[in-house]
Each structure stands twice: as C-alpha cells, then as structure tokens.
Length: 196
Image 1 (cartoon, rainbow, N blue to C red):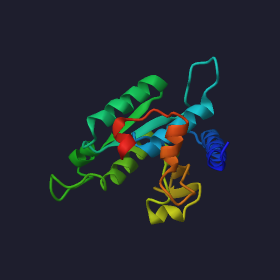
Image 2: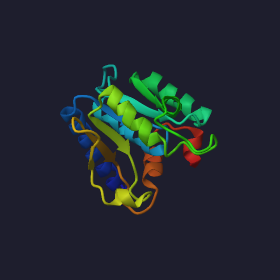
Image 3: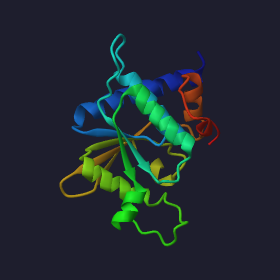
C-alpha cells in the first residue's frame, strides 16, 4: 500500500470517528449536502460510520440542502436519488422562499444567489432546531478555513450554538483529496461533479 493510500485511510478513519462523536453529542444534527465532491465524500464517510452489515441503513441525522433555485437539474436528480438510496430525511432551505419573505433582497433579478445562501441557511437552522452541522470543506479553497480546526463554533443567537464541522479538510495543499477519495473508494457522484 502506498504512503498516499495509507494517509487517505488514516484521514477516513479519523473522519468517521469525528462524525460518530458529533452525532453522539448533538441532539439534532444535520449534514450539509449540495451534491458537490466535498459533500458527497462526507456523506460516504457518514454511511461508513453508521452502516451495520446485515441491517438496513439508518442515518441518525438529516441532510440539509440550501437550494439557490439555480442548480443544475443533474445535481437535483443526484441529490434525490441519493436520498432515496440512503433513506435519509432531506430538509431543503430555499433561497427563493427567503426572497419571497423579504429576508433576502437581490439588487437585480440576475444577481448570483450564492451569497444569499447564508441567510437561508440560518433561517433553516432556526426553523429545524439543528444544533450541529457537518459540512465537507477543503481549507485550500478559502483562506478563512485554513485557520479553523475540526470544529468551528458559531453563535447564531443567545439560545443556540451551532457547530459547523469540517471533515476531511485537505491537509495537503492540493485539491486532490476529494477526487482521490471518490476514485479510490468508488464513491458515486454526478457527471458534473467529476469535472467541477
């Protein structure tokens, strides 16, 4: 076994341990799922963490998808197919609903909705009462993530503390970890995810 494979197996084992710990500590956890490489890898790790051979898979958390309304149809089909195959409950927060409520205001109708996802995410967390979020992220994509460790504590109100968990952050400085993991572990993904 190569050193790179040993390192990947070590990261996988560490991540599975962390996922189990978060679920054990939280009352209402959710896994952020966009259908991208990072969230697909994270869900694959979570399935490994809770699959018991010979029993039906029952994941002890919900999937949370923040829908901008501008997703590729292939990604939505993949998300729905993944939910059907795993039996996990899906919660969808809609940026369009936030726009209708007036909590998100776009300058122009053609503006990107990506920045608006944060408002919708906070509204969905509040509505659903999530106390921990698990999200896959690579620290090489955004400088602010490089400073974070495994847990990132965020205060969204005086009553609640939300934990955004960064699992399988790329400890190497390259963006190849999710791609390698998907390839070596044969993780299903959309055709679009393969090229993005």
